Length: 249
Image 1 (tube, helix red, strand yellow):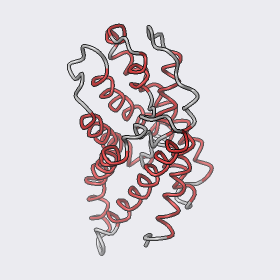
Image 2: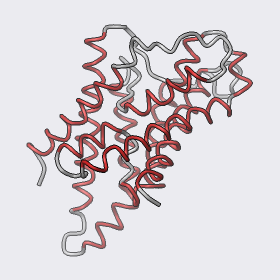
Image 3: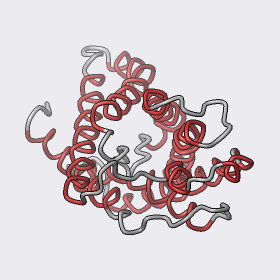
Image 4: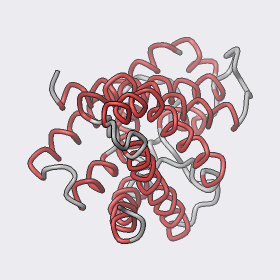
């Protein structure tokens, strides 16, 4: 399996499970309706962990253009591979969102509020203030990339004198730790914007929302859509550089 297919599958899993839990919580007459923010943040973290377990050994499971660009900025990913990663991520996110739509097919008609329908697919601000929204997505993504690099670096040092031990431990525990990082970012920093912290996670499903036949869906909020794309990209690069300049070994 190549990088493109691995990132496609990993990001599809991420969106299927992540947007799936949002659909369960928001859409009318779902058995998970009104389960709340804790359910959403924990499930997104677990979705990340499952995606990383699935394809991490193949592509590193970036499943996020901000992570790919952040790693590329410090030389951890060849620039020639960046488009392959990002195209796989975007397509996987789109297809994952289509599967969520299909999975909850009877519930779209039952749900009257178009904002809830859009909220299944993409993020939106609690208070619309583009400067503040940009800052929130930027800080969340800095923490994501900085945290991922810290986890990976720590795990790589657990097998000092026995590199195979580090590989085995990292493969078993690393994805879960990254998932927990995403969950705590959601709990601690996700309130202002819904914490996209991932351009593919927001833009791919937003495009799906725009093209799918969802009754009474309303607009796709393209005026806001640049925030969860640009801010995470900037945050991912800054997070990687900060790690490199501060605590990298």
